[in-house]
Amino acid sequence: MIRVLQVYPQLNNAGTEMVIFNLYKNIDRNKIQFDFLVEKPGELDSVVKSMDGKIFYINELEKKQYLERLVEFFYSHKEYNIVHTHTHQRMGEVLQAASIAGVKTRIAHSHNSRTDLPRIFSLYKRITSRRIEKYATDLFACSVDAAKWLYPCKYKQCKIIHNSIELQKFSYNQMKRNTMRLNLSIKPNVPVICHIGRFARQKNHKFLIDVAHQLVSKCSLVKFILVGVGPLQDNIRNRTKEYGIADNIFFLENRSDVSDILAASDIFVFPSLYEGLGIVLIEAQASGLRCVVSDKIPSEADLGLNLIKRKSLSDGASLWADTILQELSMQNNREFLSNSALLSDYDIRKTTKLIEQFYLERAIL
Image (cartoon, rainbow, N blue to C red; front, side, top):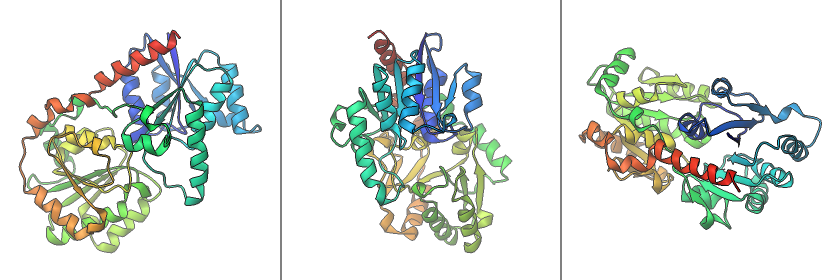
């Protein structure tokens, strides 16, 4: 059996982590097992352990410098000939340490096209990118934008790996829609707008609530479902109270029934300031859901189902609200769209075979 070391800052129930967990659940674990190197405990640690994976916490060796600790780790764990590190501030050092210790396959994987770090860190980011380009043997990214951002000099050498999902899980189902609306006490005729994402600056919740305020003034029946947690959550809750629209907003925090929530919704709104791709946007389209998104979303996120309406954030909240109302008036066969062949490139089974083959080929080098 091949053991592949996946490197993250922390394993939480978020988009980037779920990309690799979708692979983890579908890969042939008789041939390949994932272990994880992280900096601190996370929400998904117990899931890893239940799937016979190991978790190592690099912060357990706090007295030594980070790079030195990593080198020591790789020298003491020679069972790892493949290291797959994902977007995080220290991935350059991870790859350098793995190189020093003689790890043969060192993968960098970009999941974003920007960061919320202050501008003072732009120099650090350039240094990190150079280090990644120097020490990685393979470059992965979820989109061309994500490749250009992290590998500015070598993005043309990057392999684009789709953020794939379990398509059948997200196929539209009328029964799921009815049950979820019943659970939330939402009547069948009430329009529901959904957003799923961490409450952080990148996801632009402040603007989203401005849009909600405008939309409620134009259609008082409308409800918003916001799924996720994060540092700005209390701030956003307070903003809904200031606008007097708290009764129109459901805050559902992290959920395991995202497919049901998408089925219960009529429009998915995604006003992000930037995205590597936005896996939840793939999930929304797989549910046949019409989507109003910012023009900062990479073009690869549009699956060609005629469900995506791109808007500039500079258009303002009122125009966004008008666009949502227009999209609500448009009808589409969600069950038909959920089974479209255009979704096939984002089928987790297809991506799993691709990654599995890559790992197996590298293991025999």
